[in-house]
Image (cartoon, rainbow, N blue to C red):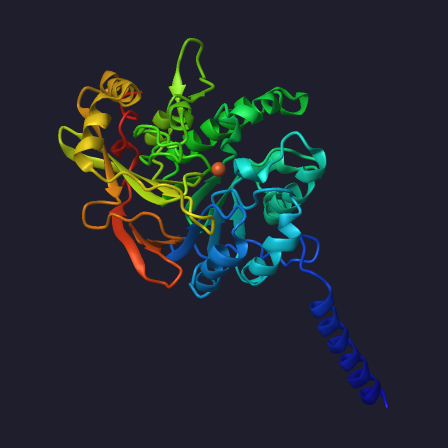
Length: 412
Ligand SMILES: [Fe+2]
C-alpha cells in the first residue's frame, strides 16, 4: 500500500514538473544557475567567452549557444550587451535560449551599455536580477565583500578557479558616453568609478606577487583597441571604433597610492602580469597583442580580444591593412605617451602592439563567434569558433614565469 502511494505521488510529481515546464516561462526566478565548483589547483581546464547579443536572440544567439553548449568548458563569460531594449528581454528572449547552458556551466556576465537603461529604474530591475543571481554565490569571497546586500549596484567581481584569477569589471563608468553621461552624476553612483578602480588596483597588486597563481584574466565590455570604421564611415580610428571610447580607456587613471603619482589602467595591467583582456562592444571579432621586451628579449605578452559578436548583427569590418595600422600605432599620441611611460620606468623595456586578427590571410572578422581558452600547464591555447564550430582563429602563448618578467614591475 505504502509503495503504491509513493509511486502515485512520484507520478503526480513528474506530471506537475512537465506541466510547469510547458506552461511556465523560464525566467530569472526559475532559471537554474550553476555555482562555481572549485577543483584541484594545477589542473588544466577550458573556459569560453562570447559577447554582444542585443536584440538578435533567435537567429545569431540561438545558433551560437546551440554550438557552445557542446564545448567541454568549465566556465562561460559574456562580455556584455546581453539585451538591447527593455530589461524584459531577459525573461522573454534570453532565458529560453540560455537556460540549458546556465544549468550546466557557471555563467559570468560583464555589464554592457545596452544592458542598462540608466534613467529608468523599472527597466533596470531584470538585468540587475540576472547579474546578481549569476554571481550571488561569490559574495562570500574575501575580495567580493562589496557584493553583499540585495539592493547593491556594484557589478564588478573576482574569483579564483583552480590557480587562475578571473576579474570582471563594469566599464560603463570608464567611458563618458553621451546619453548615459548624467547617470555618472546620480547620487547612488557617487564614487562608483574610483571605488571599483581602487579595488582593482589592490587586487591586481596583491595577485602580481602571488606565485601560486598561474594566470590572470580580465573581462569588461568596452574595447580599448579596435580598428573598424563605424557605421558613420568616420576615418579609421586606431583606438576606439566608437569614437573616443578607446581613448578614454587608454587614458583611464587608477587612483594612485601616493600623492602626485599617476597610474593608468593600461600600465596597471602590464605591471601586474595580466595575460589577456576580453572585451566586446564593437560588433566583430578582432585580436591585438602587446609584446613586452627587455633589450629585445620577449618578457611578457598580453592578448587583447575584441569579441562583440555573440548574436548581434555585424557592424562594419575590422581594418586589417597592417601597414596602415603600424603607422597609426607609431604616431597615435596615446600609444606614443604609453611607450614613453614604459621607457621612463626602465629604458631597457619596450612595448610592441600588433594587430593579430583579422589579417591579410583571414580578412573577415564579421562572424558570430565564441572563444574557447584552455589553460594547459604554463601555456594558454585559444580557438575562436563560429556557430558551425569551425575554427576561425587560434594560437597559444606562454604565461609570465615570474613577477620580474613583467615590464615596469622591476623598476618600481
Ligand atoms: Fe556596447
